[in-house]
Structure formats: structure tokens, C-alpha cells
Length: 103
Image: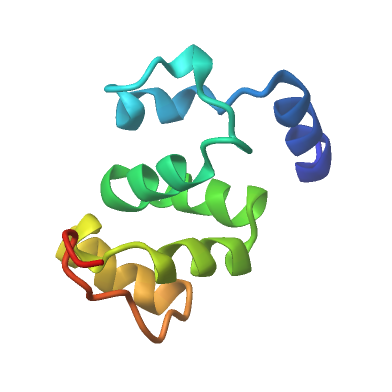
């Protein structure tokens, strides 16, 4: 099955691939919608996922969407190693380094 067909099937089912279940353990996996909860999915996949998760993110959301989300969250929401790798893979020039409590 081609990638576009897989994406269409997942979007119709509003379901993530089952391999996301371990990295989204603190959420009700059956209630997670890839379009409504993309920030949560992206952050958890970047922090705790492996290459398979990162590839799925890039194929499903696209690099630009991932770059936009990562550029707008506090850098402290990402693990240091994940932050550095995401910077390289998704060509992110600047992260938001404002403290979480800053307004």
C-alpha cells in the first residue's frame, strides 16, 4: 500500500499506527487524533520515539509543520539530545528559549 493510501486510511480512522502506543503511554491512545493532537504527538515522538516515529512524522505532517511546532515550543520541552538531533534533521535554526513561566 502506498504512503498516500496509508495516510488516507489513518486520517479516516483518526488513528495513529500502533507503534506510537508505547511513547504515548500516559494518554488514552484510542482517543488521540493525529490532526487534533499533532503537537503532543510530535513532542512525544521527538523526545521518546525512534527513527520509525520520526519518519512517520515527516511523512504524515511534513517537515514544515514539524519545524513550525518545534520552533514555537519551549526548548525545555525537548530532551537535550532530541533537541540537537531535531535541529539537524528538521533544519531548525532557532528554538524558543523563553522559560516556561515567562509571559
